[in-house]
Image (cartoon, rainbow, N blue to C red):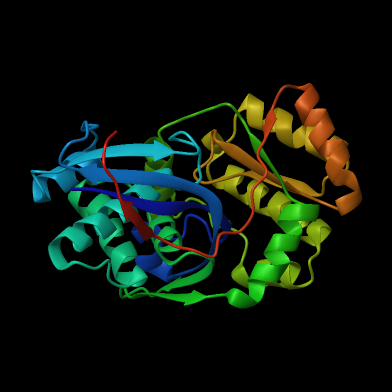
Length: 308
């Protein structure tokens, strides 16, 4: 038997980094993220070749007769929550094989977070797994007692779709990196209290989304990125600086690297009338622009398949 499971990648919108236990167990967390129409496909089966990775091998330990193969529309290390999406798809596959159903998205996301954080000892937070499992626009809250809850924000989907079409520019840096080192440094900064800078708040981001105001959103990105680089200087690189500087020169209001930083993708936002100039300038520098939008779906089992 061979099965396919899909899980979306995500774009962090507010509160990024505070989903690390070093932060939320100290002062709580409030985050907003949206899943994208960029997905990972996880195939599990008895007659496919096994790709050996920590997550895949953990799945195989629970299901020794099944191998795992991963395909993604974006390569690993992109800052779009790829490892979290893979973990989500693998947990969904494991639940399906054990119980004949996928179970609730929240349970899948929390278990995927446990797989990465507690079992594999990766310095990750819970945002990627929950956003991928639930799908759509997801508001997440964590209390200092460790309790985590999610809320679907369907009221923000229309505004986000508009911004993706008219204001946002998602540019690939060409850099791929392992985020573990950066996440460890970020977690340590919360523990030792060396900096009190905080990421963009959910309240200010949702206001910009509801108003469909790309200029306001860009200003939030600019301030968020300045705070991130103050807390974690290694989050930026010369390439990221070039992308952001070029975008600002062409009229964008602001930009930031997605995820932990130091590579992957940069999100740019500004007035709709400046979007084309920004895109053309970055293309001249041979950067790839990725056109995508909101996905309303979370993790799902697609079909059984047979090898040809």
